[in-house]
Length: 174
Image 1 (spheres, rainbow, N blue to C red):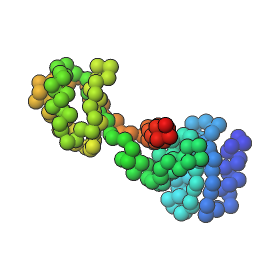
Image 2: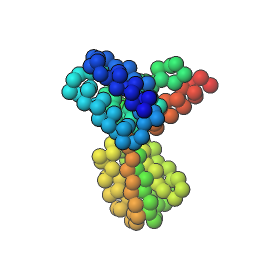
Image 3: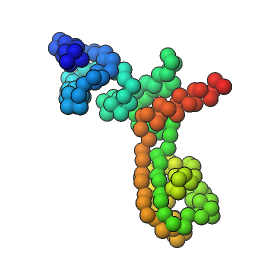
């Protein structure tokens, strides 16, 4: 209730600029969703600029047009969520099937769409340059007589981006 009251007090004066620190912390899921809707409406319809500090990166991804990734006081990157995802990590596809031989993997690796390919826990993990063209990899596997059981596509989220940026910074200091 204190969190709801603090946010309500902030918004009741219709400010042009709002700074919020972990605004949904301690709120139940319904109140969190309502607050996110209110913040989106304020930004889109009323032109309010909102600075949001949060460790909840999925919330930042839903709410923010621009994101700055800061770790231990250092600015690691900034841009739109899409720009950060594209800059740091590749979209990924997981493929489960039969007949995935070392030769098939080698042939798939030669495809210009493939950034990286590896086998993990019985799955083929393929990092791509363009997820919208993933069907080309599937066609290539089918042409190689691979029997595909399951395909799962995954876009990189801001948490993955953050972890990769922090890891890169750590390796840079070593």
